[in-house]
Length: 147
Length: 247
Image (cartoon, rainbow over all chains, first blue to last red; front, side, top):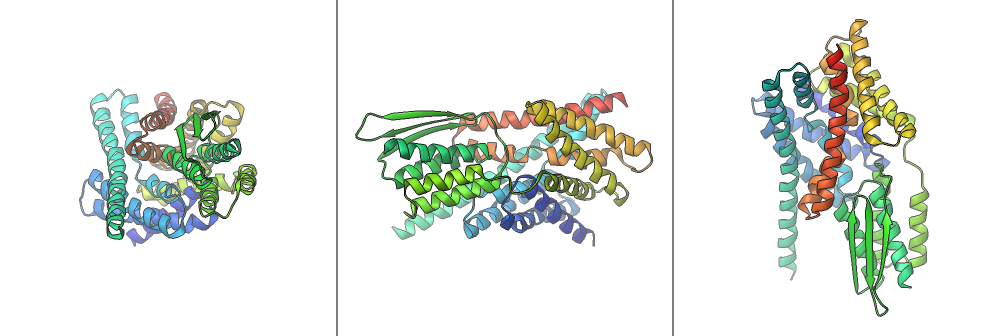
């Protein structure tokens, strides 16, 4: 039930982000699905006691792969699908906590939280990069087979 | 002839860049279009604020510069230009038809009305509140705060066309509204409401674009987009911090 609620809400949120970014109407459902997939994986990892950084890395990798599949399938730029999926993973809450501790002059906790938020953003980037590398490898091998 | 090809390429590039496409995609599209029209060698240098494009032919090399000052997010236009460039490379469009198709894309309105976008921002805020383990009691406050915060960013951006200021004021308004909801007893957790409402302002597109551009080797664009994302994050953070420090 808990996971089902999260899946439904993440689908809605990602599709809403599609509207905010003016994504084509026909791709709203797909971008919602990508968002749902990413957030579902993130939740599954964090429930089972995994660190937020690892969970984000895996989730953003899956998001990027799914977006690439959709981009190939519907012949649209990959950015349309990837953006809506990535948004829930952005460490907004952690950045907020860090900011709050800075305001309260609690610099030790604030710096720790800020470092964590930075790591999570880094792992989002790494996930996207990994999937890009794999995409390039697949393209290369397909090219070699053809020639 | 060469000038016409240049015009088509530059128009395509300009629309894509203004709508928030990655820099490497802009360069790729422009070079593809040029090649489809039989240009032997075309070079373009794209940064978030301008495009330099030059075509080599039998005549002396021609170069043109286009400045980009206003950037919005309109992924629908990116997809449309992508479709047009695909048709050009398939040989379905000649130069004149391509130019007309691109002009149509440039003049087309946003896919969704501002009201619908505000509604979407409000829904997203509410959803994020629950996703970040907030309670359903806070759903309505986050819904309203997120919607009004997004509205104020759009409104202030029309008044003062500086992104930093409009985002800063928007997050101040989000902070104040969330505090008011708690004060009136309609909300429970201040932190969760603020985090949920701030999410529509988060620079997700800039962040992904920056990473993808950096990896594609577009160092200048990647770093400048990263700086823009950082500036937005800083605007949101400092706006919230201002409110928190007065509580």
